[in-house]
Image (tube, rainbow, N blue to C red; front, side, top):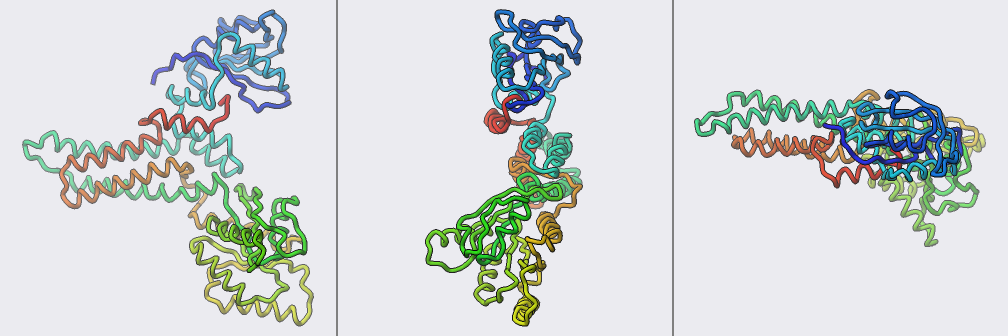
Length: 474
């Protein structure tokens, strides 16, 4: 793809605030010439690419705005593929804004969100899937999300998708060769080879599609919902996990009336902890609404942690509530945890209560797939085990092995799903002796879906949607 000859654009590329330095980026036709107009130092027009030059930015009356370091990147060896200048100035809010205003007065246009990366894509410096990874990298909230974004930014997904496209192109060529000689009544010479090729492609696409669930959890975070009866220790556990007093904790039942969300990083993953209202029958309209929201949170959860105060008896009503939660989200892993073991007194009554609880769990086949452990959020006893179990349950459910190529974008997932549908349709047509022109329609549609992922086939609406997620300056 040829380098674009677009007008120069400028933006602040670092977060607005006070710091040691700020970086402003100028890119487009004549960027060096524009910056030279306001720069006092070496003649930038005569300098080599990838060099840095100290000097001063001055305003229209030749007054010093700031001392800066200017870095030059000549086309096509820049991020955007265009002539680019990066200006490092002092990091104050006012001085940075003043430098930008001085640049814009030379006739440079203020950049729109994501416009630098969009130009990098249009100039063939990045595939569309790599451009999206730039935004994912910027917005990553966990180490695993950073790793997944870097994997996509490296081009791994694009290489895999292009291999799929080449296989489909080969299959389409076999079919259209027959169409070219339809009057000679030439039939498939390699029908078995075509079927084998499509079946292998079908299997590979399904495997890639299955990686989306793990990719979603890594990118968006694992929704971990804490549920249980009032005063079961849900809020105390949430506070213990995140290390701050995010949720209000009292001995009064029903203190939590609505869901309370908090982010927690563990093992390189982001967990979105959700503390819910205690499950019970109540006449209080506000608390009843909180219970409904608790039930909805369970249905949307990736992992459910059911908390039970070890000092209270395990009732039949509670068991029905747990079964109802299980029925509402049958595919969601649930951990069963007894809490506040630090407050359990070694009396006969309490010992019998704990024995009763253990017996109930052991005799109920519905608990056979649940992990059960005892913890104290106050003393942190059992917390490390709970953390590992939550992590394992979430990622095992998503079949994540830590090394596989991941699909993290819902846009990519949708395109891969449609590709699979077209490949399935082509295989079905092949099995029923459908004519080549109909098979070719399905395969070409599959090609278009895969091309939409890498940007080989796209439109303005898709590009606008993707790059609107970026910050100004990137």
